[in-house]
Image 1 (cartoon, rainbow, N blue to C red):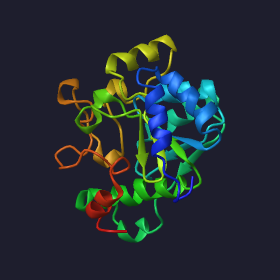
Image 2 (image 1 turned 135 degrees about the horizontal axis):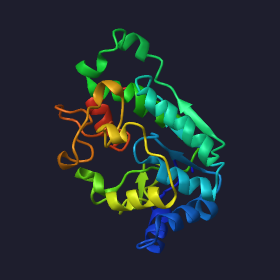
Image 3 (image 1 turned 90 degrees about the vertical axis):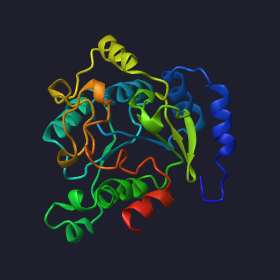
Image 4 (image 1 turned 120 degrees about the vertical axis):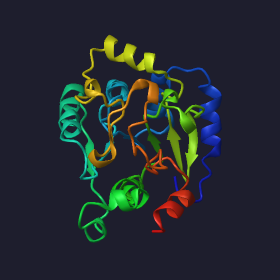
Length: 242
């Protein structure tokens, strides 16, 4: 789709046909009918990532998988990525590197503590925005049980001139657990070590289930999202411009 194309008809069509559809049916429609060879899956290879990766691999294993490698990830995450890629037979996994200017702005690797929004913008948001150029649609793994603004997500929405698909929007933690068990999927190594959600190493701590799924992300900071799923204007405001 180009900047002149209005994505709202495609979104209305998807929402109209998938009000109660299972995640697999939504993915089948997107990958095999609505956006054939024009869709990317964005995955963090985090603690719940294997479920969606498994579904996509079963439908179309050649789907491009965009992995934002911030340069500050846990080694466990990188090894888990490699294990899942081999196990699921994913054939097009693309690692996205931080914006080159990060070298000048984060020479001491402490930008995360001075300005977490700026750090996320240069290491995550901008690299993904550039990687999504050329696609019409992208799939993400957010789930309703994550809480906060994720509790009422639609399965399809506009992201600028792209269509963003959230097939697991209505999933709870029990759904995730059941899928892993049914398909014998390996858990992220840090899952059983008290990390329900895993991001960059400096910004992720252990958290209990009672605290909330994402309580260990940017703990103590007034921040709950890296910016990938926020409106562009809000991201730029928080990150201090381009």
